[in-house]
Length: 190
Image (cartoon, rainbow, N blue to C red; front, side, top):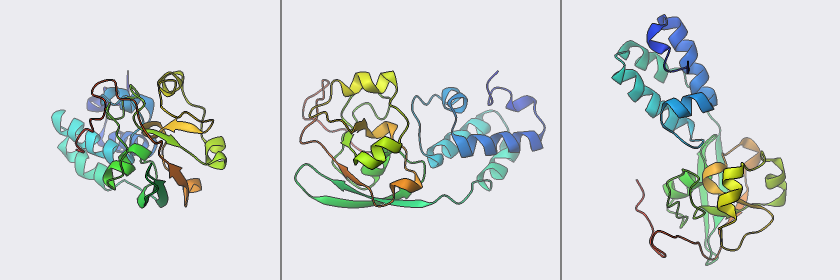
């Protein structure tokens, strides 16, 4: 039984502890229950958790959950767009690079909205940071095979979460992307 499916049978204290773990780790079981396919920021997980609790009639846990979040470190990175324009962006630890780019009006597409089903959020990372990241999943590698301008340090922005080690990192965007849905179209940011 997944973490969230069993919430309604637990005492409030147990719910609080379960939510704290979910908030801190944004683990696979929580993402699956909430209908999320890829790692998301802690803020996005919090929002989904609050909605889930409200739908399950656990309103008393919602306020408790919102006060459990630890202070997350702000990380500043620089996106280098294909035209050479540099955009400095700051985001919370755990935010993926695609979300951070969208929040800061960086020209990074993300046609599948972070579902790891396209290569339009392709980014090129520094060697040092690339080596410190977990290995890409098979799904990510399959999508990277479709990316324009693939390099040895290419990753999908939706799969890379900000960590304190990334402070000051420079992220290069490729000169083009391949969008098989509508080439050249850019989805509106939500």
